[in-house]
Length: 337
Ligand SMILES: NC(=O)c1ccc[n+]([C@@H]2O[C@H](COP(=O)([O-])OP(=O)(O)OC[C@H]3O[C@@H](n4cnc5c(N)ncnc54)[C@H](OP(=O)(O)O)[C@@H]3O)[C@@H](O)[C@H]2O)c1
Image 1: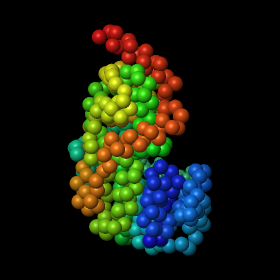
Image 2: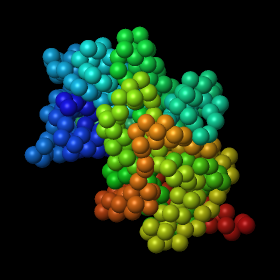
Image 3: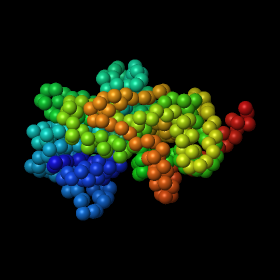
Image 4: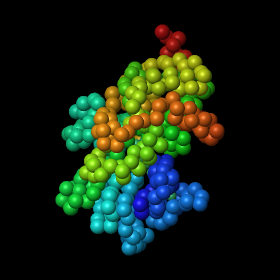
């Protein structure tokens, strides 16, 4: 097939492009040209434009038509709107990368969260929402633009809603935050009880599911949750990291309200400590299993590869320069007990 990917050299979109090419598709990508394109015999055709600059995007696309367009990088409704305007009548499918954050901006969701819970009323604005409050609101609005186009003009939309996407080279470095701390052998400061369940998803599973949408026409007009089948709490996740790195892991919980006052626990965009979901966040996989035959890679398998990758990078994780403060607080807390 002749496929366009908006994005194409980053974490999720790069994995998707590699997979589509391995399956024999002809792939064109649109990027701003900041991230390097991996050069190989099967390099995609590269169009250079900032997708938020609509005239530039139009000019880059020219008169091309596609069997499928993947939009991996729409964060704002105007971006989805301009994509609908540009690709209406010029693509057989339009596949959008959404997120489970579209649910987590409501406090009415019921776990396991099914795809039909995407329109529940918004909760009061919560700037420490670990799923991103404004981000979730904006991604909901992107979806709405696409569903309107689908229902009003038969624009052929499908979408995936991933949970926390993980694997080597994850630009958010969420796993590396914990791996680096587990590796140093000191106890770990755990916000709250560490007992809230959450799900990650391996980036290659996301890429495979995006590609699988092409094989199943039933997916037109549908959204799918995508997550690893293993449901872990933060405490269980940390014990798995200990097992894989052969470190003993001592977990020291701090009441959430105390933790939130610590100067190193947050940054302007939210929580520093990843996977502290503050409430259970488990997503139904019934639909994606039934329609696409989805199965996830076991967490121990992809996490071992991810740990190896991060260990070779020699980078620091978020807030590691203040690790001594975490360790000092842990000493204080355990001494008090
Ligand atoms: N990470 C998660 O845990 C998670 C979870 C759920 C959903 N998602 C969704 O995943 C998507 C992002 O995935 P990702 O972070 O891995 O990024 P990505 O898909 O790899 O996107 C980055 C790519 O897009 C290009 N790009 C970025 N801004 C651009 C622009 N304005 N115009 C043209 N090209 C642009 C970058 O190249 P240049 O820099 O060279 O332009 C790069 O090729 C989003 O839709 C997000 O909502 C992520």
